[in-house]
Image (cartoon, rainbow, N blue to C red; front, side, top):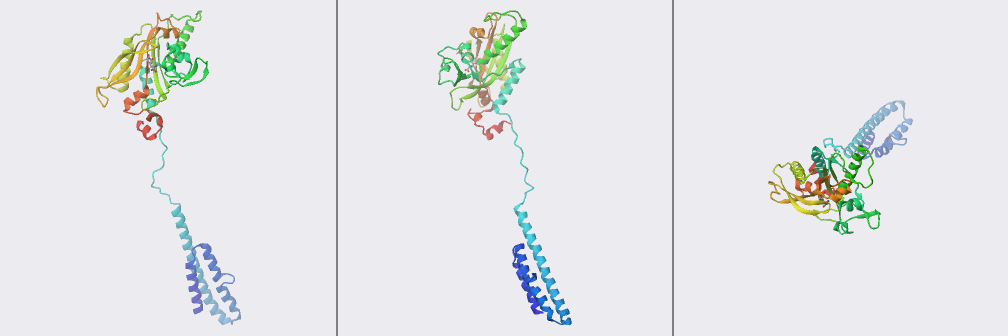
Length: 358
Ligand code: DAH
């Protein structure tokens, strides 16, 4: 009997040492396998008498049951431990907030362009779009810009393939070519509505609705520092009719600036200047009466009465048609409105900067 107890104790101790299920099954074989110790004991009973077999058999069976019980306990314990390890490894923190889809928004300059379009739209201005690759004619010649104008030099302007050797195509240096493009279309359309023959090159002096348009978009110059970028934005404005004066320019632009900046006390100054395509010409400065920029004159646009040569290049008779134009910088307007001091921030694409405008 002591022998059986010793085997049971040995089995329990051996099972306890198993660290994996595979280990345990190997150890089990030593006790319960085909040539395991318990099996050997059973075989050894063959020589016993019937009486002895009864008592001996019962004792062996008890021992066997004890070993099987210990085996099952150990199996369960190892399976539990394995499950614990797996649960730990695959742990999910269900209390963590879910990952959300990032919310995009419009770029601050786009917000400004939308604002410009809405304000001029409310004053009856159409919005026109035009090509960023321009011909020499639309960018310079049609705008009365002389051959020796600095903007025509190779190092001030990005020239591209196309056009002619003496007049290569270029990335537009301003949105002013849209004055010509839009006006020509407008005149052509209304001329066609009137019918009748019109000699080629003849200037239109019939009746037509006024041209009232803004043309926002990208423009390019070889320029790069805190306040200049090789790509920047402009918004052109043009109002041509039979009776449009400098007074109208002053009214429209003042109204625009006060609405844009939401300041009724904003003061504007029209400072005499020169542009080839306007005569007279003026730079428009604004002055805030309060806030961090109060008292300083800040330039926001160039403007003027459209030059008669430009009116002609639109296909219009300058004796009948007259108007004004202006060109402003939406990038600069955005900087002033939000207090941004470096233009390059707009084009770096840094989300920490951009997300502040949402
Ligand atoms: N195109 C000019 C520039 O880029 C700005 C400008 C000045 C536009 C006067 C105008 C204008 O329409 O009348 O510097």
